[in-house]
Length: 516
Ligand code: SGN
Ligand code: CA
View 1 (cartoon, rainbow, N blue to C red):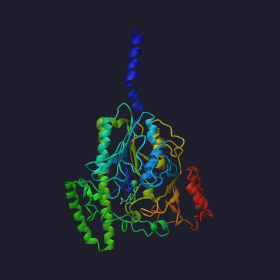
View 2: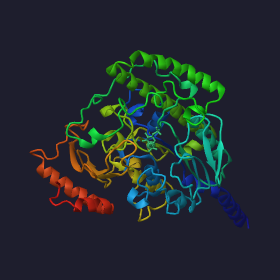
View 3: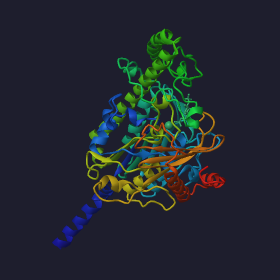
View 4: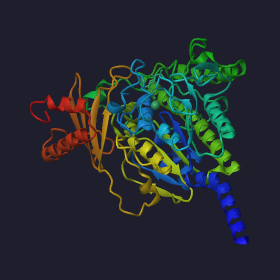
């Protein structure tokens, strides 16, 4: 009898502990996903432009991935890849065009997690035009959103303007959601930050944060684009495309219809005071094109980095919340951007090109007990791998129609031999506006990059990334590269077939002589 009783007590205790156990074996997953955040500006990646202590903390306490690439360097397409684990041609979202919005009825990571009891939420920048599907909770910025007093669309479809600065608000909404969630189930939360997106409006406390610093111009700032037609024809130059008025905030129209018309009176006074001073600096250089160009570069970096400062500070707030609540030990934290960005390399801002700065995206991840602190991974990860990895963390197998692969083993068992890809595939579509970057697809290996531009100026580019990491010398068609070119073109066809990109296949098939 005594034995039976103690057995019964044992089972009751076991039952009581079940929800906790379930949650402990299946960790919470928190993804902080920013916009246009270049790893050239993150100190964990070796940047000396600014300190990002909170992103660095995630890297230090977990892993830093040094070669993460996107499939299509643009906002909405990248978010669609994060949700679906598929290339743009299969998830249907190839560009930011509002007319070709995302089909939310398809399979997505949050739906698969929800089927396994995860509570799911997306808060912040979304940009997919159609409303989110399959999340328990969402609150999203309409389109690009605004930095000050932003509107948010609330469930089921109710647009409300909130008082405050966008990066702070998105963090606060995220913490509020965490506070009121069902604590018996694990959660999957995406904190979608707008920073560091154009037009880089800093929060009031960060105005002037970098004024004392003179930033070095990148070595390729005065690139002449020799041998690279698409680079010659783009429209994303700091010198020409970047607007003094709207991007650099020199006497902007403080007008209710634009981004400068949303300040409250106090914010307006502080903002105006600061940028009135900047306008005087501009007056001093505006008639000297060389000085003006350098000044624009300096101002661009100062504003961009100031928005990154708020971004990193808010990541710190979220990490602190996890510490204080004890959630940290059972929560995977991922920080990534939707793509990289040009910080003056080639004279540019923006992204889109398959060149390194915008092909890459930062990615750091903390997983207590599973990823050893200070882990560093060089293998080539692609953003189609994000969804499979998230599913893997939750103990869910990658569905057969997802095109990526979980990279969790690379992080948890970095010493082991794991079969991994040696080539990544890229395809960018949006043309001509904005920024006039010709559509292209291509492959990157550890040592080379082959790009096929198509449309009006169809041509090839080939770079030796070891000899020419800045990608200034297009060696396509040059003597001595014939064999390598043939090999890479064959590999490109393999990749196109593997990822089922029929549009790219048709473009290559039209060529009479392969490669010309
Ligand atoms: C806006 C920007 C562009 C940017 C796209 C896409 N212009 O149109 O510079 O390339 O967004 O960015 S702006 O003056 O309106 O800011 S993305 O990150 O959403 O893909
Ligand atoms: Ca973006």
